[in-house]
Length: 142
Image (cartoon, rainbow, N blue to C red):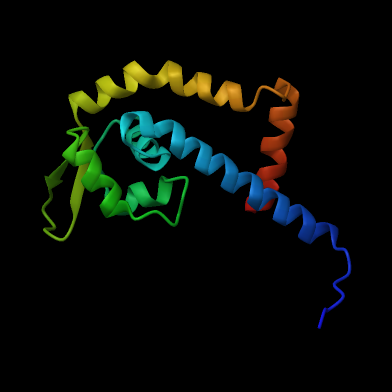
C-alpha cells in the first residue's frame, strides 16, 4: 500500500542539504585518511591551535564542527600520534588537552593542502556565492 506524500519544498531542501553534507563529510574523511586521521581530528588540532591554550574536552566538544563526535576517542588517537597531550588540572575529573610541537608542525606542514582541498571542493562557487551560502547556512543554524 502506497501513501501519497505531497511535494514539500522545505523537506526537499532539507534532504538535499543532508545528502550534500553527508557526501562532503565522507569525501573529507577519505581525503584526511592519507594522514590516518579524520576531518574531526584535524578540526581538533585547528581548535587547539586557534585557542593557543590548553582546553578541556568539553570546551573542544563545544567548538567542534560535529556535535556527534566522540571527543575522548578522537583525542585518544591524536595523543597516540603525539599531536596532543592531556594535562592534569586541579580538578582531577578534568583533563586539559594541549597541542604538542609535533601537532603544531603537522598543521604547519598540511595547511596549504587542506586549503587547496577546500578550494577544489568549492571551485564551482564565486566568492560572492560562498558568502551568500554562508549567510544562508547561518540562517539554518539559528
